[in-house]
Length: 127
Image 1 (spheres, rainbow, N blue to C red):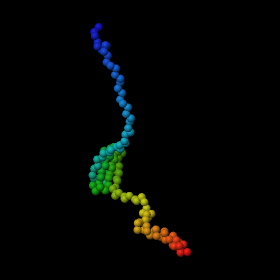
Image 2: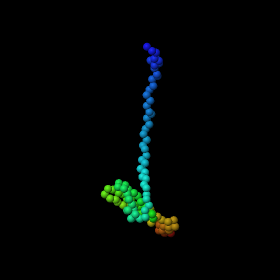
Image 3: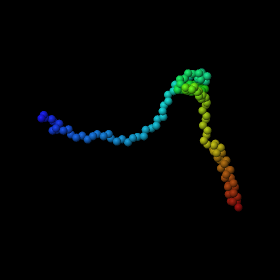
Image 4: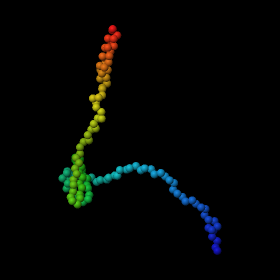
């Protein structure tokens, strides 16, 4: 029988290596990014006549930036959505200015409220 060193000197026992437990961190939700090719057209008629393949959509904008057009084509025909551009509305104030008093009106209001009390006090002192 031939000499086999592994029979006499076996390798030391090695415990199996398990990956360390790492708690799962909640991942932040990232909204999907939509990339669109926008084509510049003269007007709504040019957008309506622009060729779009079946099952596809194309976004277009008027050269004067007055409107945005989205043309979608299906096997049954095509549709054209028109979004007109309008200026942004100014935000409405969240408080009523008539409920507030200006600094120059404060003294007049105080004198108006205190005057009857002062008159009664003066009458009480004279008696």
